[in-house]
Amino acid sequence: MGGADVVVIGAGIVGLATARAFAVERRAKVLVLETERGIAEHQTGRNSGVVHSGLYYRPGSDKAALCAAGREALFAYAAEHGIAHERCGKVVVAVEERELPALEELERRGRANGLSGLERLDRTDLARHEPGAAGTAGLYVPQTGIVDYRAVARALHDDLIAAGGQVWLDARAGRIRAAPGRVVIETSRGAVAAQLLIACAGLESDRVARRAGLAPSVRIVPFRGDYFRLAPSARALVRHLVYPVPDPELPFLGVHFTRRVDGEVEAGPNAVLAWKRAGYSRFSFSARDAAATLGYPGFWRMAPRYARVGWAEYRRAFSRRRFVAELRRLVPAVGEADLVRAGCGVRAQALDRAGRLVDDFVFAEGEGMIHVLNAPSPAATAALAIAARIAARAGHRRAGEA
Ligand SMILES: Cc1cc2nc3c(=O)[nH]c(=O)nc-3n(C[C@H](O)[C@H](O)[C@H](O)COP(=O)(O)OP(=O)(O)OC[C@H]3O[C@@H](n4cnc5c(N)ncnc54)[C@H](O)[C@@H]3O)c2cc1C
Image (cartoon, rainbow, N blue to C red; front, side, top):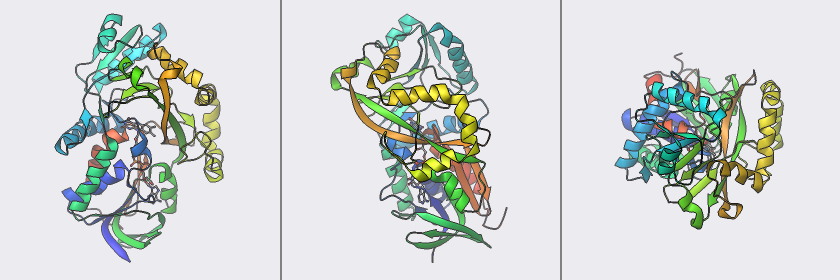
């Protein structure tokens, strides 16, 4: 049987950052297990590439604290490792008067979360920052940036390997059992034992926790996000990042424009309830995943609450015209012909039994193990801080110690 001090499930950015923290900073023997044949194949490699400022999150929440710490750590890490990034700032645009109170609340939260240099924008200021954007008012956030998250994942992987760590690809973690002093994980490449297991399994996190004998308080519900790219002739309509004022009821930010580090401008992502956890087409369906969603009481409590907005998202996912109309609220000159369909990503969003989409990060602990149960956006931004939190929490815990 293979063995390590620490086994990490999942080679997304959270798993790799955590594995690196144990291998580099604590000199532990670390093994990462990953189902896919490459790293960062799911959320990490399919996101918007934004380094979030921490503007949106409830002051005092884990998201607020870990986003702020992770953002600065990430910018420093990217600079040290020569990874493409830019702290370019973003504007949040209030298109209608009725959005102004929510914009004010964002500004208040931003200040409470330690953001300095926030700037309220009138129409003229808005035009100065983003000439293509239209709105009655805006908020400029200088701390926001962009980065190549795949490159960050590669660098974390390389640091791990250089510190003597291992990554097993094509190695799905199956049954997990805690034995005295150790945790044994069955994998498709044989069993491994560890003193400590850290599960960072993204879209599969609730299932992995259940296989480890935990009874997680949440279920993962997948929300797909589709992207378009602006044709080269239309890229000049967006300088940096242009966001709407988000619906405060939802943990998603609304379709926005994002300049990527390669100069492309992306528009999206929407947030459509998906019927397959790792399904990257509008028609993806898995009976198992659909049954997991529909068989969960929280889903039926959530459904009436979000029925109107959920239906609107569905219709927009299948109608380019509606998608463009939403984008044109922010940047009116964008036309249907300017948009080219790009990829999509699927968010692992935790839903609780009461039917609430859980906003904050969720961690759970069992004997000799720590599970990351909810790490949606901004977890890519926050990954280095999440890793430091987990490493500190693990301390010198050993399997068998509560
Ligand atoms: C459309 C979209 C846009 C986003 N935009 C941003 C953004 O701009 N900025 C930001 O900060 N965040 C953003 N996010 C969120 C961010 O991408 C995620 O929070 C982050 O990538 C989570 O990382 P992770 O390592 O937890 O998950 P993942 O990257 O999903 O990695 C989990 C890994 O676990 C593996 N795994 C699962 N089960 C097993 C098993 N049994 N055995 C072995 N391996 C297993 C999977 O194969 C996968 O590789 C976005 C997310 C999406 C989907």
